[in-house]
Image (cartoon, rainbow, N blue to C red; front, side, top):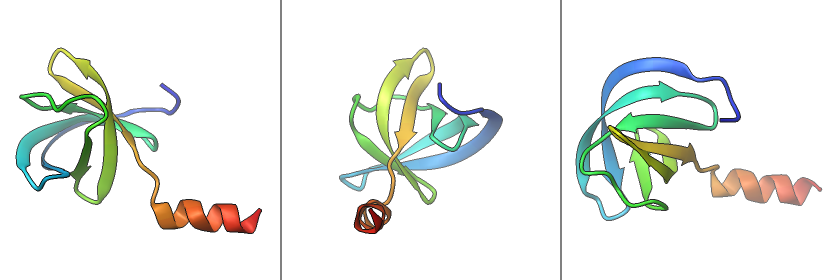
Length: 83
């Protein structure tokens, strides 16, 4: 893990790319990603939106998933234009 995690215990909803809504719980969160309790577990590489954050499932664990947040495409485009 690349960034310091902050423990959470917060109910949330995860929305899949297809619009399906799943109840979940945020277990911990950092600037780069989060650990989410969710069942059934979405497939690795699936993209979910939780609140205002979008992320890709990068691992499975006993109670759910680890996800890495996806940077906004507009932000990525602006950064490349500045170089």
